[in-house]
Image (cartoon, rainbow, N blue to C red; front, side):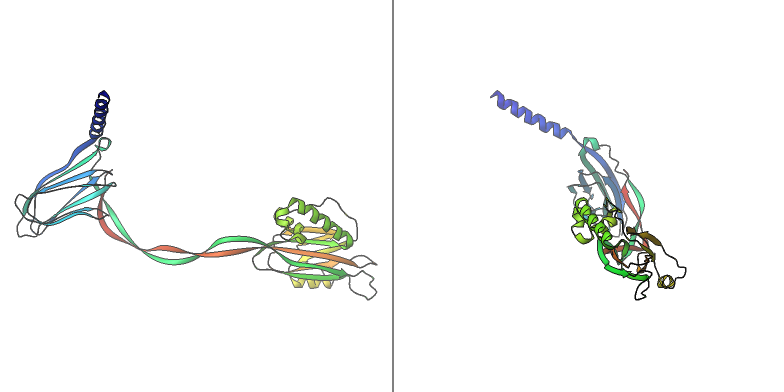
Length: 343
């Protein structure tokens, strides 16, 4: 029995405590006359979770229409041809401004009494229900579709893999000891790597580089095993090469136009952007990155011709494009002033 009494008293205490957290605040008590053919418009701000009690006394007059609207929202209450007193209650879900409209269409003014209260949490008791008026604008937009890069892939593309014979100064068939080899860089190329090696020594050096790269760059190198060293150059700017083999040398010059290449063949002065005198050489070139490139080769060996291995790997990007909708403000129109919460 005692347990039941304790539970009952606890229940009453809890609900009394909850009830005490609510306060009723008078927002407006108005008695006034709405003129003939006019509408009285009244605006007040409310906090989220407020319960609004709206009472209207017509004093025996017939009011054409009463309406309560959430500004920039929807209609909350609407009634026509009101002759008797009305009282309505509704809850507000979010902070907003309510407009109360009393319309009179008769030939004479009508007196009415309006009372507005809010039931709220105690912590919101002092909420400011006044409103401020601010300008509001409407905007018209022009819609267009804009292309954008959705995805970018890096692609390694073999441009050249060949062996060229360059004759000696005293070739039996009087073949020239100068040769020009050209290659074309593909579209969207952002750089390229090269390998130039002479004879068996150059081949041995490249094989060693392949083995070392396969260990250090397994993921990317396995995609194109034969060109692992050039992929390493593209990604890291280096080739894993531990030894240097002696052997015949070749002189080379890179030029980026045929005019300079023709000057080289004619033994005239010419311009180049990279050169060497090597048994083997390799590197990464970022520019030039388009069009034809010419490799000018010179064998200064008096008696023996030499075989030159040349490998070129282009680094290019492949872009996947998408379309996005872009809205651009075309016109801004002043709509007027509207009430906003003062808080």
